[in-house]
Image 1: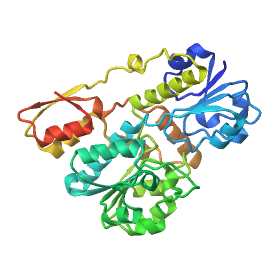
Image 2: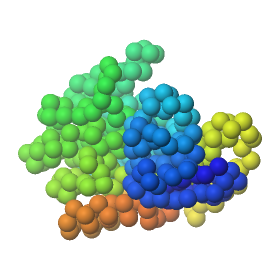
Image 3: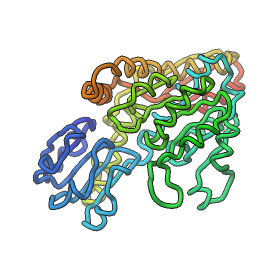
Image 4: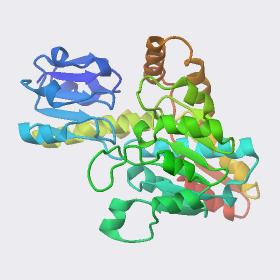
Length: 380
């Protein structure tokens, strides 16, 4: 069985080598010629797996190591009898860590307390749901907007205007859709941006086109009170350098780029592939995932909770490093910026997830213990 894989998918040999020869290709370079006689195609979000790409090919299975599927032509897959799998939730924890790190950076810049703000989560799926669990576990006030889930489940949801009006920090975690009852393309447009409350923070780690980038650039130039954190961009890999300069943090679509998340994505599509073949999955992620460099921290139980939160999160990941690297890449002509965007992703440094930490508290447990548990860390 011939397998074609994006060159940036980790551990492809370990998970898929037993099923046939593997060829690797840059994700943006996967075209009809590259497919050749491949029966299995393994991709990331940078590859548009369309009807035009797959027509007259012998591809029988497509696996994407991503949560989102907006780059897959699922209607054509069903029509052509092509099996497919995605990796829901694979990088959710990494994105949560990114959002927490961004909130900490914003709070430090403005000299404000995170516990005193109101948070809005737009999209309560794999990523947004995990973020909700953490924020609520910290005891912070959180509002959530998810019309599809509200229609299905009912429950304690609010509409988008309420989020915009009441929330000091808004984090977007929707898929990118252009059709249906609740399309998310330019969900945050000029009208919504104008409705942001004074001093609001907007974080987009979902898909670039969920926010109208031109409108965001315009309002950030007019309203110095607003802050934006963007990990995703319209027109990727060509991010708008003017918009990036206006953002408090700007990064090259790496929010979910923890090692754990990447390997989890490969493992999930491997499991789905084995199920499709009707064979047992004999490769274990646990056996392949290396131990983190940092495994344990000790804190005094009477330590300030916000200081401890920042210390724990930044010991594992601080998005300000990615922001600095990305800003250095935003010079030069469009071709060089495109290449730099992909290079930063391809050569991304090793990063683990915050919930892999074990934390020891010396003294009587109180609020800090609750916060440590809310982060997902093991409390000794």
